[in-house]
Length: 306
Image: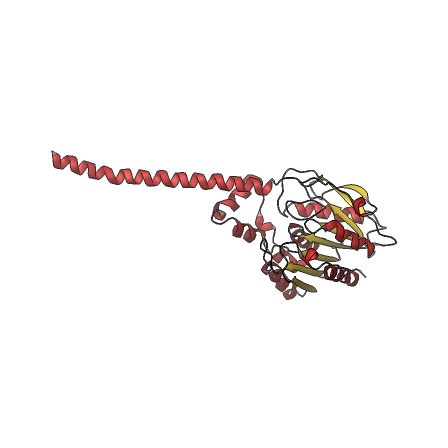
């Protein structure tokens, strides 16, 4: 009898260990799901920042404008900064977790230089940003509709719409490439610090939860990162010209992203240029090299929109 009891207890031990392993695995899986859910929510629902100043702060004339995004017709808010005797317009597309001011550049100072150089400037808030409608951010997938709506707005005003360029920052830079590859009315694209491919970008920033994050993001929000790939879209940009700007000290979106887009553009026969700014972190190229930044951007626009 004692031997039988020992054998029974020996059989119970593996079963107990198996249950503990299953329970531990379930706890880890549940924790991972909760973490990835939280990340998905924070990615697609970033905090809105107020538009707390206007171009009047720099002595610039401006008009408040509202226009619908293309396809889903969300009301997009922005400013039109007019230039004297011009039929050329630059549309500025801001980055993720920002608004039309893009204070970390700062975009308003750059807009002033563009107006002084003879370009109308349209600045606007993407959906779920600033003062625009919408309750979700998709990091380019749906924001491209807002940018296409901005292009439609400019085209509806013949006095400012003869030539159109798009200048984007970070997410806005990626979106500018997407919009430029789809919309024939765009004559030139300037992309400051774009990611090359959203799926890879999110994957690299969410390790070790990336295997859960991307499917969960798609399931919960409908966002499909595979649809946001500037490195693929740029192959359809011709005959438009492209200027890529990136800091070599960028830790958020490494300069390798712009190098990859540049190679893809050149391989597709597109007139593309890449300016790498030494020592500039993410979106700090204008701050780091303001005079060179402005002159290179304006020279590119003058040549592309002549």
